[in-house]
Image 1 (cartoon, rainbow, N blue to C red):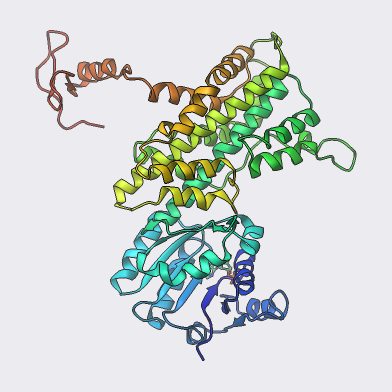
Image 2 (image 1 turned 60 degrees about the vertical axis):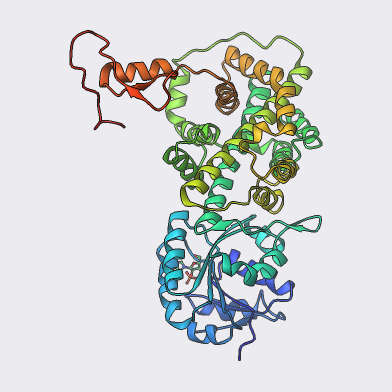
Length: 481
Ligand code: 2AM
């Protein structure tokens, strides 16, 4: 009998928690898993006393569904998703909807979307963020794919999503792989935010000599300002946390960062689409550098830096660091939105930028007050070319600028690495430059490779000069890397 509103395949923790969340919001869910035992165990334990039903076979699962059928997968990204799609297609009809809530690559989502639409079915690739807790009590959801699917999944998705006030942290992102692309950028931005916080900690510790409790107190204060966010909040807790021996746990943790690859994928996309998303790139490279622990230990004994201590007012400098972090964060988000805008152009997606800011406003790791300001900026002007040009952010960055420069200059002078603060400032100075030295670069390219250059006085016309007086006058047309 068709009683279920949606089926969910994949009973790992995320899947289980999303099912329970959907159940709490009045939806009847049919649970299925490759290893069928897990269905019975789930029904007998976590889902006991709920309206959740289970299925042992995909045919049985499909038969429980109201039409158009909605089947959501939360399985391992990659081959498992394709395998399930292949099994589901013969069991479904035109107009039915398959949703992939896993961490799929957006190119895979694009391919699956096209292929299912050719068969008359609808496909949605949705970013799901917020971890296990988010899945259970309110994730940030970023669905994209076949637009016709949205009205049919909207009540469930917006019902279970995190809320900011009454607004759900879920809206339609855009076509094809847009949802998974936006989730990837979200993760890249998360890398950037974490790196910025770590640099602030490093400068306070390395340059000012503040201890963990003091730094924790500083972050606690910052959390009451524009920087109010989940990541600053947990950093406050982490720095104050004591191990069983009464010592700070953070000091005992090896300074070698892991990564699962989503930051790297964002940086790769940035290179692919030619967008200067420098801060996320530096955040990824900083993790790489940190993981060279043994080499760094050896190098630290041989490579020297400055030894002069910090001179100045520490309290005032702590405020400078806060402003440097804020300004750098604005640049990072501006870069992230530049990347999304470029991808939207490339793929013809109609991205909803204000909606994206709202989706990230709650439920996910980068949730923050700041995202509310970004939402307002795009509400004011949906065609905003760059976040830095919005009045609110323009003023914020102008107000922070002197402090930001002071922090980067001081960190350089004292030898404390601040790659993300520095790259953000370099980007800012590059972006606001009417003239950059690429005129010389074009001349160099033309000199050694006859790559041609464009004169300011004759736009669109490319020409070659014989710079040396010898060699040919033939310009390069084949080598344009
Ligand atoms: P399992 O319980 O049968 O292993 C997270 O790993 C989820 O993805 C689990 O529900 C898991 O099912 C499922 N999964 C992982 N690899 C899979 C595959 N190759 N085919 C089907 N499901 C898979």
